[in-house]
Image (spheres, rainbow, N blue to C red):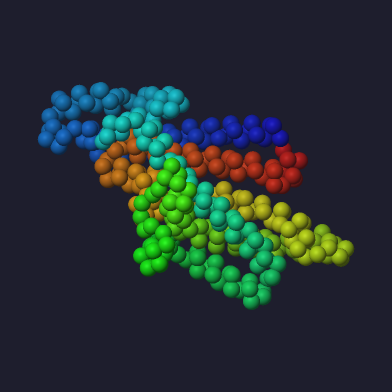
Length: 317
């Protein structure tokens, strides 16, 4: 088991290095000159001044030298300074990241809270009316992009019913109630698609599990359906769900970035959009690398979680 953990962690470090270098390279070969974000438009024609700025920021150094310098600073928590505001990138990310993470955590938590019992129930009642209804609703949830769902939720719950704010954000420091109202609609817009995916995955595996011989033996012993469902059938059926949750994090991150823009939430996504518009390459680079590293780390945690959910993996490693 320890050998497997060491192998996963080694792979994690190597993957992070490859991903950060690739992202750093792609960001630096984008069209346009980063110096244009640092100086006024009328000064961009002064070639001597432009070269001076490039030297000060180290933009004339070879790519591998700049990456090595950036990597050394990044390990120490320094991701550079914004080309637009001049503020440390780390400070802006630290200020905005909790907002993005809260939306994601609430969305995943709510999705699992709804999808696990729903998937188990529909798998148990395969082919019945309740199963067909839930499957139809899940299919409808899959067909709607998260930003379209968000616009519908804004129209119904914010503009018509006025239960929640349409845009903006209240931090926890402003009170739990206002914070929950701020996170409710964005998280729900993300969760609807996730609920549909998780329910379908768990339902499919639960149908297969309920036909296994050990389930038939449990029924022959007179055990109740509820006990069999949640004690013997649910745990082995959770392994594919763990896989999907881990792999779906990438899509969830992308959805969160768009949802933040739709709801005007000052998180990482909204800052990324503004950085792209302002050609703030340092900020774009830092946020992109943060997202990719986060995705790699979550998938590594998912791999390690397999050992807890499925003991067979521990025996084969």
